Length: 404
Ligand code: PMP
Image (cartoon, rainbow, N blue to C red; front, side, top):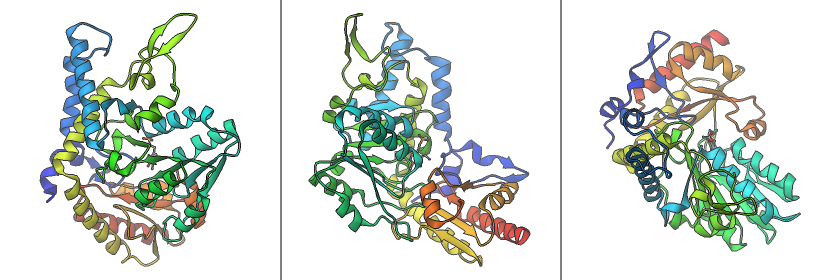
């Protein structure tokens, strides 16, 4: 069971005041907060063993290399990848997706089809559009329902021998819907398509098993998982990673370089050109350990409680509409007040020390579907409390009074 008061002590930022009020941080779907143990790991790295990795024989370089490769193993274990070299360190989900999208340039032909979903973040739309422009492949979209779920019948119809790739997020960042990825992966494989799951949002809520899922690519960012910004991961099945060409050329990703011909290093280095975010990778590993020490099962139970409580309390406000009402959703509540622009609500709520996100959440097609400019999004984490939700409800009521 979650001991939220004890957990809150792990996060120094939660003691902060904002605009004279205690901070209520409900922007977790954008970036999670950082526990002291991760902050300490960052300070320790720069204080004690800051050095470039993989190339030095000196002690510091070896210590940094060991810690970085240890972090890779922690991530491998957490996602249950078969081999550590199937985990590529990247700068985040966006970078990971672009490695795959660019890598498929020579593997696709004109009129091949790529399926994405209507619930995607822009970073899981734009790279595929760019891939279609380069190859002549065609982008197909699984539509969504009013509740914010994917229309699976249409997915079945879209799948054919022309389908080469399917890309879908595990959890929608704008609505919180949990997509039926197990079923989607199985179905895609029946037509021989590869599947990439964008786990940017599921990372903090669900402990995945990439082998059980039989997923081809799985991508996530550390900063949504209590880790630092600027680092993330790409999991790819070994055979796929061997098939894709390197994304960038440079140091570290080569076996041998001459002016006549260069040969590339094996996995994972083939995709890790240049000096990586060493400290970030190490801190990512510490963050994963931290989240596992809390326990993903307990996190899910507690966040679900917050979701139910928050939904009930917010719906007490007349004229408030929640977007995304699927039964399969995580602790994200996207809402609007009738006749009020979400940005105005966000501004007033911020004056009361409460951080929510307002806007299209990098998911403009979802906003177009509902014909709205954006929503106010409150996203809860395991360190949030029901009292904080009460504060949000009071703040939204105040905003409503001031704006209508
Ligand atoms: N996909 C989803 C579903 C996301 O929520 C995000 C981050 N908001 C991203 C991709 C992009 O992640 P990053 O900015 O860390 O690359």
